[in-house]
Length: 171
Image (cartoon, rainbow, N blue to C red):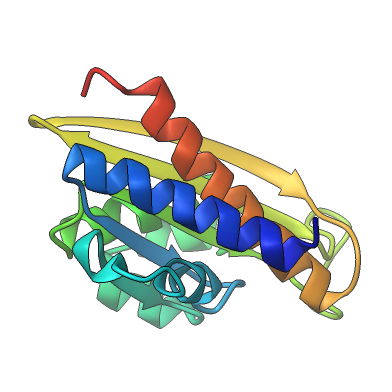
């Protein structure tokens, strides 16, 4: 199965599960530049479970659209788990969604450092239901060129959303 086929398969599974639970999805994306939102809207009927996507490439956009704290950006950098977590929370707060993903990373080919190399991507998944917020955050180092890093990040984001739903079936 190609990466593109895997993305479609994951998006269709996600849509089915969100529809069954009457839930809405929001995305907060930086390095994937709306790739997750694009992937899920390839699914016919996604307007019944996809609320909106935020592409917050700059730090200013992260602050303005998602409420990411300037201190977190300064202390941890844009590519960090605290910022990914704030992005996911912010997407929930600025939408009608009950589940969200935040993605921030370094797709390359430049922009990396010894501490944060090209391919480093931070993810956070947030689920809010019945007044309860559940969060999961993860950092991955993805290989390949810019397109490969972004494609893999979209797959990880979708798999994480499915995992978040499975782990929180009671919510």
